[in-house]
Length: 267
Image (cartoon, rainbow, N blue to C red; front, side, top):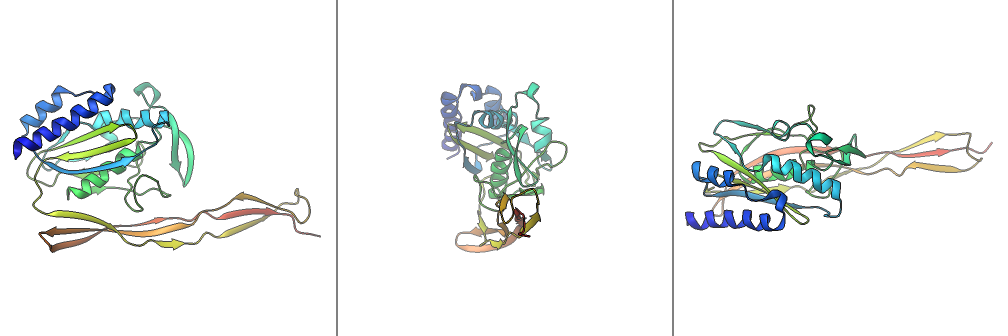
């Protein structure tokens, strides 16, 4: 059984290597797998992206290369920002859309929150301890509501602790349009299910601004607004068919954005 799992791990790496030469099989990763006896895939999570968004894909790839093969020892805390480092052009990152204060704006390293969010979900499924995590200020397309982990260098980090008795390894691999993060380590004798409750919809307000520069009786929509959400995420742990633990992981709020209208009232 152990050999079959190792073969599966190596096949995954080799498959990705054959598709994307820039993330080719690193022999040091195989050595670490042997050294730390990492023969189990504890958890795995996959998200999807637009392969035609070249700059964003580059950013995810550069960041994934930096965390791929990272070993986290028992009791050690992994920091996403520390491992990935500064997002600069000199380090290979490019300008792509990122969320700032609820709005999409261009920024160096835009898109790597998809990697931190994919890692976050793999960590949840591995039943590891989350130390620091923040949700996005607006919903994202690649993970369900309440399942994201935003990062911003020197400001917002994602951290988790290896609360097991054995080393763990992070594997981050990309194929065309697909990002997979796996945790190698202990075999879980329990099943972990992450459940997102039905979100509460938060209505967007309407903000009206008088503008006498407009023609009398006319209006102009500056921002169409966006509804918000409040959502709770739970972790359910079972052995066999018996639930042994239920835990609320987070309750997140995605603030609504007001609809802004300029108008010139009739005299």
